Length: 259
Image (cartoon, rainbow, N blue to C red; front, side, top):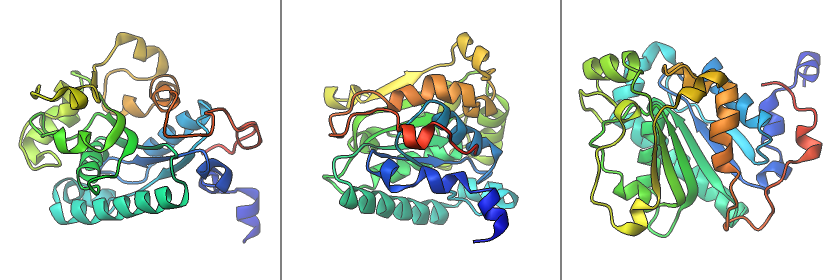
């Protein structure tokens, strides 16, 4: 380890230590820009909320220079979905009955559904949060909903017309439709059987979000204060999957490194 790394430790190392992993696991899936200040802001919001789980940013993309490729490549989506499923399976094997969450922003929201729907038949995670998901409103949620114990929450904004309106109309959504995105309008209603309908919730934009840095645009979903006050609480609800009480880890969070 270099002296520079000793003076500037990577916060991701601390956020993936064993003490956190024993509490639960949260994977952040970036948008088509890849690992960036946007997803680091999301991570910072979760830390500020004292989410006690391990927190990882999984960059599933080929980088910002290939943003449209990231959005439209079925081969990339399939391969990365397989990697993420394997990652979840390995975690659940090591730490059974712990909560696992996916948080996907933009293209990462669409990929979240691809990951869930391909999980083995009897395998599930606690829940998933879609933040401005770049996937079509007609996308069938039923396969993904069969693999969450709690819910899929879809956070939307009708004002997100540049990225989730004009851009996906022109370039396409993650599922290849030239349409506005479900992260803008919400999903079209499906005739879901009751067990599945109870596992899905639309969460349209609320003006109070503006107080926390989310001004209805595409990047507002990643504002640290918004994540702290409106995303993190969804992860912190009492979870029957986790035998360990959900409480802050004082030794980890009392003086966290700033992501």
